Image 1 (cartoon, helix red, strand yellow):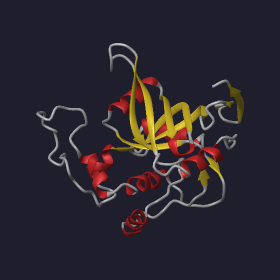
Image 2 (tube, one colour):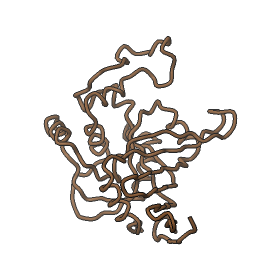
Image 3 (tube, helix red, strand yellow):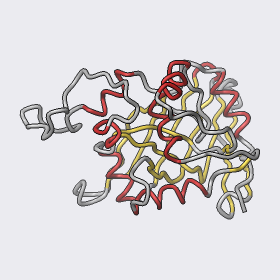
Image 4 (cartoon, rainbow, N blue to C red):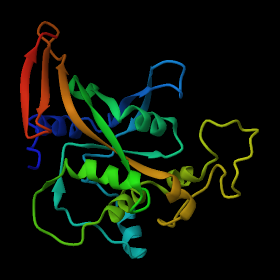
Length: 253
């Protein structure tokens, strides 16, 4: 059975729309041995890329997708899954793979005085079709999708193309940087890996080899409203039976 729409989603969407400068997420993953000597949390700020697979495409991205004969996916699916993009060489990818994808994402939306905390599991897509990790990732994400209208021609490959296209040429070029976190004195190992590049080709082999989309499927969501300091509001929603239902509980702040 496809998951039911999460009851918190309309309010979270409204808050995000009302907070255009607050699109960053504090993303926390778990680093386990042998990546670290002992289990350790790892946090970083990442850019929220919308609820998968819904994309607010920039006009230049749409034009590039058309000019390069890739096109757009039909708008037939929706979900409450959070989408991010990353470089597969980043530490968070290793952490997600080794921990089973456990993750927490936090929005602090200053304009509306609300904090949203999303706990769940993340999966990574964007690899070669048929690869074991890619098949597993797509299967995980597919379970969280709801079909909202009929349509033909939707594909996973094009969806990843669209996320890549929605980055600026300079941002696309960062996926051709030397391996993140390695010493500058170390040979990058590939002549095309260098800083400051701009990528116009949406199928650039080197950049696309490193580009990935991270999709977080929520299992528990909390909202804290601090607009009234004398009576803060805290609410928790928990997915039941893999998202078939959601339980809502009001909590003391």
